[in-house]
Length: 353
Image (cartoon, rainbow, N blue to C red):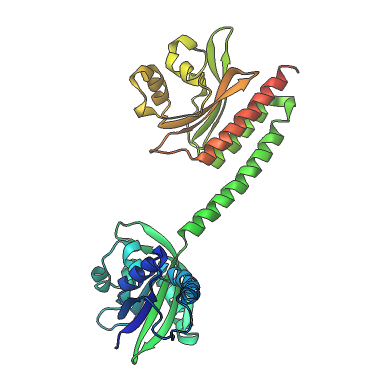
């Protein structure tokens, strides 16, 4: 096959250099030549007008081109007699995103990296036979073992009497993440509304707080959520309210009447008035007493928000995880901060009841 000649007019911009490099790196038979002026136009038009016109055209084409090569593209022989699903060709994005070399991909079957398509193959083959194309959601297995969520678009091609299937895999992981975050935000707003409504049930404040803790724990996937209040008169800390995930043991009975003086590091941290997030086995030496108490309750990691009333620390609300390493998200902390503010308002109100 004769090489495709691509002429690029060099106007000194970084965009032109990037475009030239991207095209040169494609594993197709393309010859790229950078020229100072358009070889197909006469000298009548000024060089500046040529550059402006071509640069505008290149910008439009480049944006579409970049969108195309960001997708993972394969040419696959689905029914190869010696190696079903043989990958005949793949673009650079396929190799880069999956972590394989180009040579490795050519030695592989598409079926080994594609998600479990067995249940879909009958429909896929029927669509390819009748319509010549089909679309389905699946995943591709990367060399690291991670799974890349994709939308697969397949189209039958006849290349020199050789039938292959072009598979364009579009990465949908970012879209799915965005959809998940939007759903979380929707749930966040719903929970805040429910918690706010629940805490207005001042006829039984304790029940209202327990119910609100349940909403908080379920949305953040915590194993426990709780409220601790400070008793300055007797210098004690008490676990006043708690919610536990099903099958998780309650720690509330063991966390009553705890003297301030036995937990100096913890009290000092709370006075900072900041979000406190800890992994228990990474606590400093001066927090040894606190680490022992937390570990005794099976806590692996926790996040705590101080509760203030009239600019005075009156307690804290916390979320706990009992299994595996866990990082609390900004969204979890944001929800906890809102909750701490609501609890503060309820406590403030109850003192005047």
